[in-house]
Length: 580
Image (cartoon, rainbow, N blue to C red):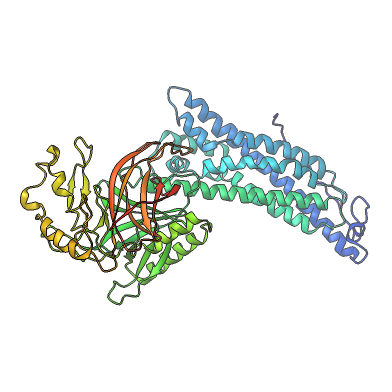
């Protein structure tokens, strides 16, 4: 666009009461019920607002031209020289698309001037506004760059208490020569312009009669300006939110993976997590879709766990009088636990933040959602007691699972047991890449592997209790021919054990990546145990044996193939004979 010299010719006219300078009668548009004085006053107000719109637009374009000509252009020229004041990238960050904004507003000003210089009661400004308002969305890019963290760091170089730099010296000399406002004040004028349009058009529309031919166009123009202003505000909030999440990610020693296009930050703070040995101080980070908590180290924060905020996420009060003050439970589909804050006010803020986030979670009524919700609610009721009935010393384990007694899975037999009954970490097979947790009933056969022989000494292994086991079992259930039960004692009502050999699966498919499948065994809606995770495999092979109590012969065992995010793939009912 050609930038032309602009000057505003203000028409001086005297308007008599009941008439306008062009001789038109204002009551034509304001109805017979309106007095001549009221109609004339409304017309004068519209003309004043129109002239203010034109004059402020002229001043605005003058400031844009000044920024482009005396600041942006010299800095770009210097960036290509041997002594750059700012780098080419920094100049583009600071000024963004201000040239395009200048050219757009020059054309907008020219069309406005044609209408307002010869202003009459029949003048229509709505059509001009409708033609240009859609292009005002280009201001969004400018706002995002201006409000970014990088731009703010560059502009801090101009602060009075910062050391003198080439950019600061150039800025001082330019402002003194032009006798103008500082560069930060000039750069903020485009951000303030859209709200100014909204105020002026609103005032203009308020004094326009509904019967005026320009009324409908003005209404549409004002709606579009409001949409543009809302869009810009949302863009600013998104940019600030994105900067906040990046700032949080920088606190961690390793990338926690918090940055996501749809993720927004809600709250962070210190909470104390209840544990069996001692309470642990964590910093919790609440987002709109996840809750994460991390521990502080000298190298930065280390992420401990990420919890999805879905339909199964909920906050429960703690009614135990012996619990710490300001305590509450965080129930979810991954790991439920109890936390407490340092004071009652902090607790209330967390409860309100959790409530606001969970209200925005979409409600799902399908079976998969209800199943995950059931798993979260019954987090501490899946199995009440440890399945391993022999500890290291040979005594039966009667430990009940709860808030401070964590469940563990033996990676050899799949049993769910407590930490005391699964204290060993060994290789499951010869040549295995990593050690796995196993229970006291599986450790002795695995110690025969060459890679495990030096891991534990004889005194660390459980006592041989096969004879005692057979005596106890013979009193409870008949012996199964050719098979040896994993369990050593039974409660009343147990009919026997079920033996499952999990071999593998074929042609599992995920749309965006290769799955990490595993199998969940459940009965009566309660999860019993999980298999090992087959990493990056569409046709996994597990080859694992599982044994469980059977209390009801009519109750089927459910095996569900799932991916590592908990996304269910398919479900089978496994029919297996029960050992009697």
